[in-house]
Image (cartoon, rainbow, N blue to C red; front, side):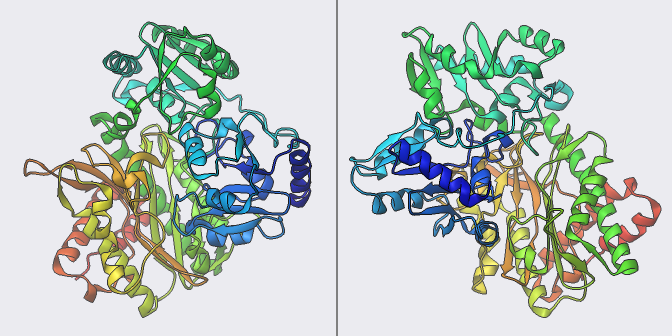
Length: 591
């Protein structure tokens, strides 16, 4: 069935149900960024593969709202689908809701699958839409027309040992029980998949790139319940759950279970992620709670930090092997493809100890493709790389020892003065943010300008946030902290020692090249009481042929030289002699 035919079928369903407009939120019952195939109705209907965007369909219009990270990608993927790309002016702003308010008639009926709509989002719709509009969250119009909808994965769930997590699940659950008692709650309900995986020290394979499993978790003061597909549970995990005093239920039983709770019970929900459907199932007294897992999960313990550093060293080895191969294949054969580079990265990572999978689809953007911020090559859609121009590579891995995310931009021939200037401006911003010393309580939005300042002086900018939190063998994009503006909640979170955050300024010239440099930073205590600073966890050199040394001051050169020395010290002992000699040259100093 073509995209046009899917729209026709959907509009017939809407007409039969007297629905004026349907909104496809582009997420799942757990407000996930990356989706199991079963829940990816936005991609099924539109072919748009980005990780952010809402679709609105009426009888005479269909549009997908997304932010500037996906403009170029959206234009390409929505061609011929009957769906118009609606470019959001402000990231995270609900511009599609304003469109509904301005374009639908009085008394309009809007359908949104309540499983994919959080309670907070529902409140926002009600606040922004005219009172005459109705919102039906009990209807799923996609379900009846999506033929051969992918089934849920039946891959087994694993237990992540304490030598990797640094803290037992029993201790984590006891922390939640204490939270319940301190806040007069009988139960806390967790619906975010990474919260559940973190609390139980369990990992799954239901979602590409994120080691998660479809589930809900309710923690009570006397008993707890996990809702997941039992065909993924083996006898060892049954014994483990019994030890944790967690009773197993089928994934689909969450609604009936919540509906049977004592009406006098007080049940806590995080309304930012709890779906309207699950929330409404609960007949007990519902309480809005500040999710106690968010901060605990973000503050990595000593074991997690040591393990993550080892994962980053492994990543450095895999990148060295890949970029060495790239240079040699270009010298010998004259070309390769973006897709082959992505596959080589995955292959070299897979040879590292404790490797599980990629942490996202590798972004390998040659020349103009590098300007498409979340571009990634596929077997059917990729460019031929030659020994000229600029290549942007953003990739990461999932290891038992942590989650990695690194971007390097490489010159495949002598870069132009313009490219060197813009690359060096990006590098200066990366160094400035890396070297920040700041008082406790400082927010991400207060620090982000350090990375943008040099670009701004040249009237240049980039349209994405400067950094996001990174999980521990969990989501590569993790809250609550980040380097971003006021439109994102990540920018409003204070930094705390133990947080791991990406630092990734960039610059993009449409149809010509993309530049981004990304390292992961660990927040640590400064030597002066009351102040914090960052430690770099990423170990791979920066391409000095892209750097205009005249634009760097002595302090910046000292940082870069010291960083390269550290990279060589950490990574080179794990390289073959031939690659080690090549790698030594890449770790040169700049004067």
